[in-house]
Length: 171
Image (cartoon, rainbow, N blue to C red):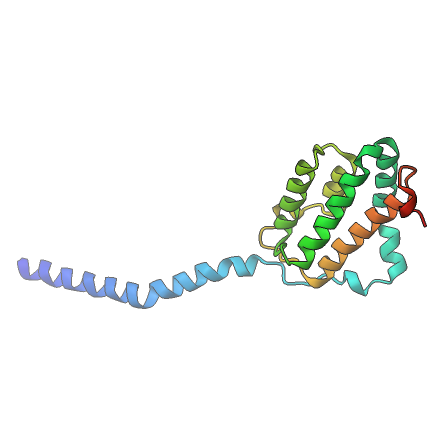
């Protein structure tokens, strides 16, 4: 009986060795590659759209920002700082994924004293960047980076149009 038990133990240990040597590395590679499979690799074709179409899509953000600044002129310089910081962050590639964009935006809005119900922030979150908060595996591609620059451009355009803009900002 000890012979049988000893043989069975020998078989079990060779199976375990086979598992650890052959099967386990394959499972680990698959496990590590799984998040890559979840990444949306289809690049956006935003920057292939005509400029006029791109700007038309941003009119809503521009109007909301202008209206907000007309009602809250004290926020003018806060939004300038926010857009300038966003430009620096994009140039420094601080946004590898969609969720990082949203995390940065929330922190920047909090830093400037804006709450979650601020119309410009709310509009950005629910319309222009909808779904980005959960985009931990969606990389920001070049077209989306261009889209972020266009969003900043719409906000800058609103700053030029608001009644509270200092004279040096008026065209």
